[in-house]
Figure 1: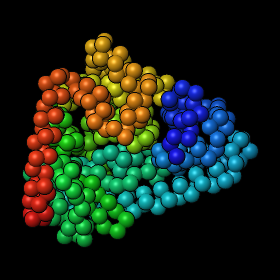
Figure 2: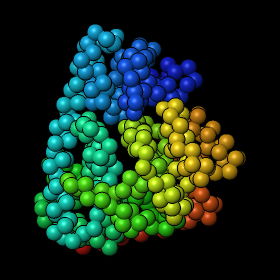
Figure 3: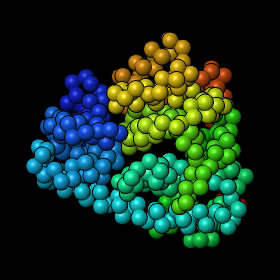
Length: 365
């Protein structure tokens, strides 16, 4: 599904991505929408449709094409499929929206500090129609010392716990019916950040009514660093929906760049944030905030190396050999050599006792 359109790009690794994103960015006009629709023919409707659905962009494309039956050269079948994706996403959203208030009450009763973050949070805050923004699950961040209490609180309300040894260091999954909660007690595998970020992020929390979420600055921090390590930056797993989220958040005029920079310095992940902003600019042709870019860019040699990695989409090309991506991309995304060494050592330590940690958590909950 991903490879077919890529073969038609004639060396331009991201033209498909650009066309998919173009109608969805802030301040997009009818001319931009018409140009994007015309470009679909160069990829073929079905490969392009597959790509939109894979990337979670189908519902938003359905919205921008609404009422344009005669305006754009796209078939009824293409639009009908997008409309169905929109209906499916809306149904899931309504379930999640109801669960958000329940989650808030469950964790408040258990006196557990928490935030909802990533898709289930950002769609409520950044979009006038949040139901158009897909989210597979609801991500929640809690302090590590309260993870057992949080799991017990959810299990008492009918959620079932699912987890595995490879993620036990920082997250677990809880499921009830069609609702899936990813419960995190770290934003990435421990050791990725120079210092733990959990308390700093929880301290930024804001009551948005339906749920507790992070501040805009803390949300931007997550948007900039998480995809580099969790999704290898440019791979098909790094949903383009995240780029729409980033564009929406960066369009806000009241962001405190110094607060974002403090979080990046604390984490030792300014380089990772710079990588995401470089990819953002490649895909959208929107200029990221110059004051932030100037403060986080790595040295000239590493800039050149990482830009080459992005431009050639090496993370996708080497996806079947993740060790190469980890060595060639995620380790250089740390700010210092000592940060990369720490990440490797901590990963080895965690693997050594992950089975024991899994059994201990299961016994406690």
